[in-house]
Each structure stands twice: as structure tokens, then as C-alpha cells.
Length: 426
Ligand code: SDX
Image (cartoon, rainbow, N blue to C red; front, side):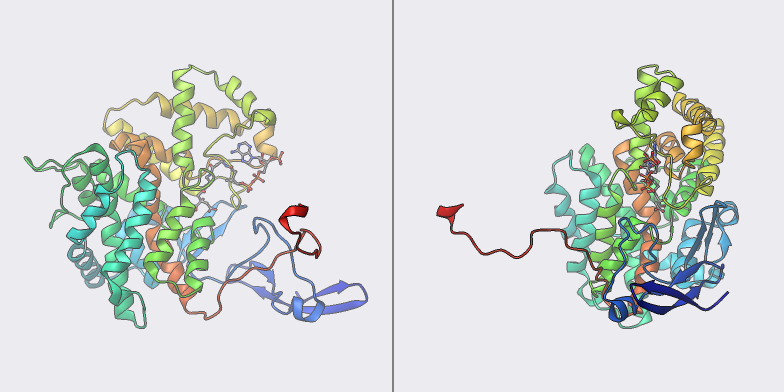
């Protein structure tokens, strides 16, 4: 294949370099387009536009492939842990035992919050959206770690990573406890990441809380499966904010806000709302599917469809397996899981969804597990944010190696020039 593409506009033909990735993905580099032709490209939603070259995550949407730093998600979900995968995403390699122990010790050392931050939780009403609290307190962390706002070397970066990774879990648990009016449970010095989170969420001051290992393993896998997903909406937000040299706390806080939307991370809540409604109303699958297919109802099959996957989201398949595993081990029969499976079966055999290549995505089954673990629906997207934190950090750090602020162009479609009109003549 030629290493340039030709673009003919009017009577001018220019050559644009072709970029080929390590997995054969191809792009036309248009960096010189405007200077050579006066034209820009237009691609609302960026479905055809690459924002960067990245070494972190590879997705093949047609084949349903997802790899973190080259490792297939299926192998990582089966054999690795969330903290190992966080190290892999951020520093590019699975940690050896010494590196894993060091990282784990750093997370333990920095999992507490400054006592003054606890006042922040009291400033929120008990019904405050947990994503609002999470993004606010993450941003507030920048005030307590001024030495980590400018990251000039690896040790400062590692210190910032440790604090954000360790504290995001504590902030989430404290948010939940505060919303219920419960005393907060401080992190346990001996419990590892996911077990410690469950301890802070569901522990009691009067007795030791040892979460079921099945639940700990399921939660750890859920976090791992959410850890990164290349240039999705919230990760692109983190990279764009970081490209202005904004600090890591502010950048991930912005990522939390982007993830909050129901078309993105908020979909795991929307899926459970959808399934709860179907169970409560005893809505027949075919009736609901008909409602979705009739566009004037404006109803989407939440948890289905994806901008990149035009095949199964591999994470959905793995999470569905964890659902079956956890619910049977805990002897939980959740009608929502049965409804979800019926809905999946119906959609996968319906031309409307098949023709649009709509398959279950990561959000379709994750809520069923989070419910089984005892995590309330309002906290589902917070769980997604905890899982995605290492990916945001890794992508922010990769972006920080460039010195060019992200600044897209536009095509203006507003009023032509006109003179100011005094108010008496308007
Ligand atoms: C995540 O980007 C990432 O990587 C995100 C994520 C990550 O890990 O970061 O994977 C996490 O956000 C997963 C997606 C969670 N969102 C949902 O489950 C919400 C429901 N899904 C959709 O709204 C939708 O599928 C999107 C937002 C996920 C993708 O939207 P696109 O790519 O812009 O597709 P589209 O809206 O242009 O839809 C194409 C067609 C349309 O029909 P036609 O106009 O061609 O007739 O498919 C239809 C849509 O109406 N369609 C759906 C549908 N999703 C798309 N119809 C019914 N139900 C759906 N869920």
C-alpha cells in the first residue's frame, strides 16, 4: 500500500501521509490539510477521527477484541487482578512481585483522606448524586497535594498515581456512608484493594467485616474489565483537559463528569432501571422490543450498542459469565438476570438490532452483579469510575508527553457580520 493518500480538491491535489498502527489500523494524517488547502475535516462525534496514537489499549470492534498493552482481556480477567492491571496500564508492564508489593504498599499508605476533606461530605445533601460528590472531592484533593500539581518526574507521577488510585475508593465508600447517615469506616490496614472497598462500604465499627471471597473476586474482575477502553468519551475528556497541562486531579475529575452521562458510564444505571421496570410491570420481552424499535417512543435498549464494537463487547461476555458464577455461588436468583438474558436472546435474533450491529456492551450485565454484591444503583457509575481510574491516569500520562494543546476547529454556520443595534431599535 502506498505511504501517502492523494486528496483532490478543486484543481489542487495534495499528498497526505498514511499512518499504520502496530495492529494494521490505518489513518490519513491530515496535520497539513488546512495549511495546504484551507479546508478542515468535519466529523461530528469523531466516529472517523483519531485524536492520538496510543500504546495502551487496542480494540478491534469488528472482531470483538480488547487488549490492554497487548494482553487479551479474557486472560487478564481470568488470571490477573485490578491492581496488577492498573500497573500494566499505567507503566506498560505487568508488575513482578516486588513491584506489585511496592505499589500495593503505596496504595495502603495513601488510602486515608485528610480529615479536613471529610467536611466536604457534610456540605452535600444526603441525596447528592454520588458522581457529583466524587468529581468534587477528587478535584478538592488538588488543594491538599499542591506538590503533585506539576508532575516533572517519575517519582512525583508515582506519588500522584498512588494517591488518586488509593483515595478514589475511599471517597466512593465515604460518599455512600454519608448519604445513608452512617459513620464512615476507615480503610483497613490489612485488606487489599477490592476487599478494603467492601470493608469501607459495608463494615460496622462493632465487628470485623470479612467480605465473601466470591464477591471480592467478582468486584475485582468488574473493576479490571472497566480499567481502560482507548479513546472513549471520558478518556478523551481526560486527555483534552490534560493537554492544557491541567493537573491530574482536575483531569480525572473532568473524566468523572463525562462518564456520568447515560449514554456512557451512566448506562449501567439505565440498564437496571430498564430491567426493574420490565420486571415490575411484567412487561413481555416482545412488547418492550417493539417499543424500542418504534423510534417515536425514543426508547433505547440500554446496555446495547457501541460506537466501536459491531460485534459482542468481550467484556459483556465475561461479565455475563461472572453473573452466573456469583449468583449461583451466593444462591441468589435475580429475575433481572433472567430478564436480561431473555432480552439479549430476543435482540440478537431481531433484524432491527442485527442490521444495526447492536450487541450487549459492558453495561448490560454489570448492574446485575453490582446489585448482587449489595451496591446500590446510585453507586453503579461510581464503580465504573473507580475501575476506569487507571486507564484515565495512563492515558493522561501518555498525553502529557506531547506539548500540543487539544483545540478542534469548527465550521461556523451562524449569522454573517452585522452591526450592533441599540436597545430602542430592537
Ligand atoms: C460505554 O466508547 C466507549 O468505549 C464506551 C464504553 C467504555 O468502556 O468507555 O464502552 C462504555 O459507554 C458503553 C455504551 C453504554 N451506553 C449504552 O448502553 C446506551 C445505549 N446505547 C446507545 O445509545 C448507543 O449504542 C451508543 C451511544 C453506545 C453508541 O451510539 P452511536 O455509535 O452514536 O450509534 P447511533 O446512536 O448513531 O446508533 C446507530 C443506530 C441508530 O439507528 P438508525 O438511525 O441507524 O436507524 O442504532 C440505533 C440508533 O437509533 N441504536 C439503538 C441503540 N443504540 C444505537 N437502538 C436501540 N437501542 C440502542 N441501545
